[in-house]
Length: 64
Image 1 (cartoon, rainbow, N blue to C red):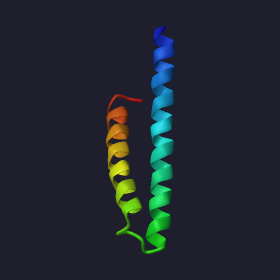
Image 2: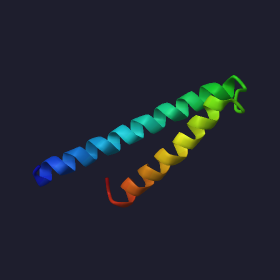
Image 3: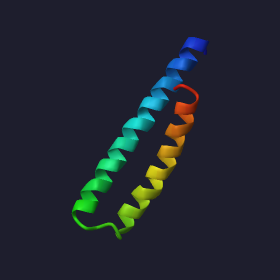
Image 4: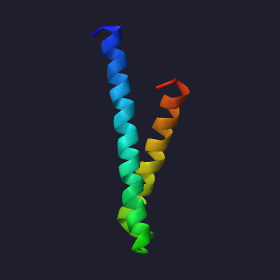
């Protein structure tokens, strides 16, 4: 794998993480609107969102 391919792979990974983070946030907003913030699904999404935010933060720190 060339350096250009590696950078493209990292850029694609960063875009996927950000898209998934947006999707999870939207699902959480929908559940919040339905007053289901104590549901198991909401709690799982909350944990997923924390993980995705941390990955996104690390990518952003490195300019990706």
